[in-house]
View 1 (cartoon, helix red, strand yellow):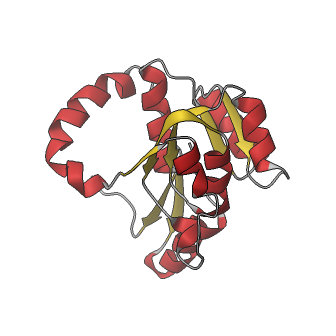
View 2 (cartoon, rainbow, N blue to C red):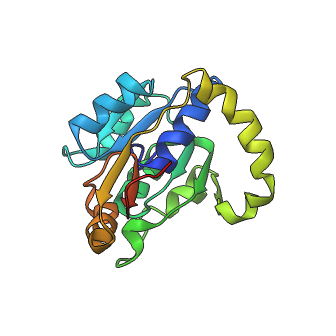
Amino acid sequence: MSAASGVTGALAGQIAKQHGCRVVGITGSAEKSAWLTGELGFDAAVVRGDGDLPGALRAACPDGIDVYFDNVGGTVLDAALENMALFGRVAVCGLLANYDRTGPYKFDQILMKRLTMTGFFSPDFYHRGPDINRRLLPWYAGGALKMAFDVTQGLENTLAAYTKLFTGGKLGKALVQVSEATE
């Protein structure tokens, strides 16, 4: 799971855990890694900037990665493709690292490992919102689904909050609070 400490990665990882999967998150700092394994119950987490990401994934997934949920593309996707198990599956949900670059460069791994790669675009599932909410609510109420919120104060600071999406300067869901809550 890339961008595992963001809202999409954190929720997808927790949902995978609820379905009995072994979950390894890729994130941007030791603090976020500790949150994933401690608070959210991921089995392991690797910090993408700690040197050899392909090697770290190989150590965390010695039998290969069966399913990879990609939120960023770029070199992180390349590292995952290099470590995929034969006949693995890749769900592409985001391409944040590719907005100003090209790649992936390890594209040959899709052929060599007979991978299935599918786009996962959330608007395709909006019609299933009530069903998804009904399934997730008991997990949330029981503490099995958790989320952190990075709240930036003031509409005038929206760009600062948005920048955090690209710099890794947030944990969980980025929000902008435009006014105090009223009752």
